[in-house]
Length: 328
Figure 1 (spheres, rainbow, N blue to C red):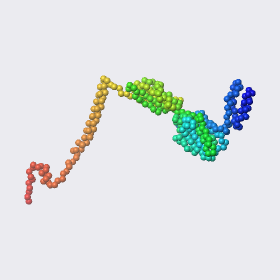
Figure 2: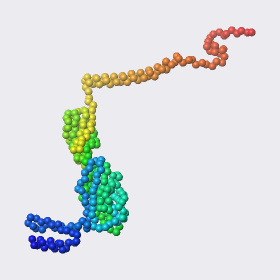
Figure 3: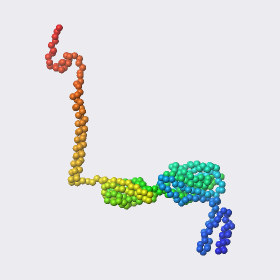
Figure 4: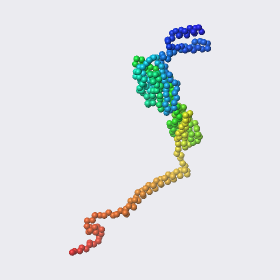
């Protein structure tokens, strides 16, 4: 015990001002895991929550505050937010403040949906994200850079996870041909939590479980397959999670071959259809000709120009004897 006390006293002698010693002692009072930490005023640090949750379509605030080792700094600075991974992830927001200015001028805002809420001069980099989508569900990292006389920078290593929740939405449903002239159905939905999919339809009952396809599990997308559609009719896919449910339907109607009386009836039906089409064509032709015959008697004969009575009489009755001529 005396040796432990002497060790602590020795550590206190060599530590710089503003530091402290954290010591863990087990049940046997042995000295374990002595850790030395600089005081907050003498080191960089980032304070972010582990997770922020919000619904799709809403807005979310990602808090981030920091400390730095420079007691007074009013030089140029840049605030940055990355997505995906620290240091190398794509930037979604960036702004810069000039020396002595508290205005951080936005230089980058991905799709115009990211806006700085905090004041970097007051060690606050908090960010607001508008119109959330499921694609925004990932981890974000805040970063601050000093320039001018002091070249220093710091970025959060663990970041804050933005958890976006959403009710189910079916984004695709289709019927596809399968082997041996069979058919299968596919249904793809998205949501968070990932929705459970079920099929219902002819000879399936209600809420029949779907068979997960090989493409299931990509992010917030879930795909399920109905491997065999054995009956014609309506097939419905239902997606459900704790926030709601959604459904969509497809219809299957296959051509079935006929035999015997069915074949005769099919042939007669085809011939009857052709006969009706022929009668329709004939009726249309008669209807077009009838106005021409009706208008012919009412049309007055066309008069001809007459040059002399003699010529007209000769043309009207060329065999009649010439008219008697009377002399004065």
